[in-house]
Amino acid sequence: MADGSPPPLPFRADTYGRSFADVYDDWYPTDDATRAAAGALAELADGHEVLELGVGTGRLALELADRGVRVVGLDPSAEMLEALRAKDPGGRVRTVLGDAGDPASWPDRSVGVVVAVDNLLCNLHDAAAQRRCVATAAAHLRPGGHLVVQVFVPAPLLERERTLEVRRVDADGVQLIATDADPATGAVAGAHVELLDGRPPRVRPWRVVPVPVDDLDRWASEADLVLVERAADWVGTAFGPSSAGHVSTYRRT
Image 1 (tube, rainbow, N blue to C red):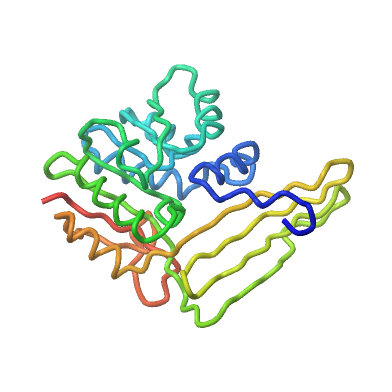
Image 2 (cartoon, one colour):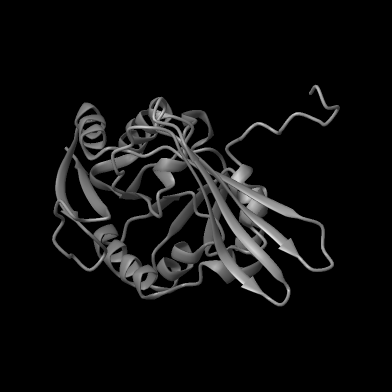
């Protein structure tokens, strides 16, 4: 670069996991929503194997394993999978290093349920990768199997929006969240910035590409998946115009 500093690293499939693996369980602990999701998915699996995309540190996968469900977890981050295996010394969750947007890296198996929770689909690089993910999920489902997707509902973005907000302030330092939303691509790039006493500054980048409901339904239809249920959350709250997100369940025809 002109000032002699190195160029920024490109955002890769494993960037999020590499950046957040060491704090993920502290920042996002298992909660009632996770347990509700595990209960719903265990019932949907009906004895068949579940493939979780973006398994991370295993928050959901281990809850499923506790219910006797066989789980395969796909994630592009070696750091996330290492954290999962540390919590699962018995290997109840089979881990696979791979990118949900790259069909070649998926495990070669047929499962009863493919699940993408916590905006996993939005973490993929672009709409083309998201569409490939839906198609690949359909190809990995046994007849009558289900794809379950949980994503947020994107708000209209008419112009570029850049924000900086304070996440935490205490005696040890400050945590900030910076975002840059680009209407041209729909992508929202962001970072958690930590300025802690006695430590070098730490930047934890992330990036999401919102998935409009109509696009998701169209990709599913193209892959011979039929929508069987759409709720606002894991406990079945009705989905409507004011819903912040949705849990959509598709069945392979």
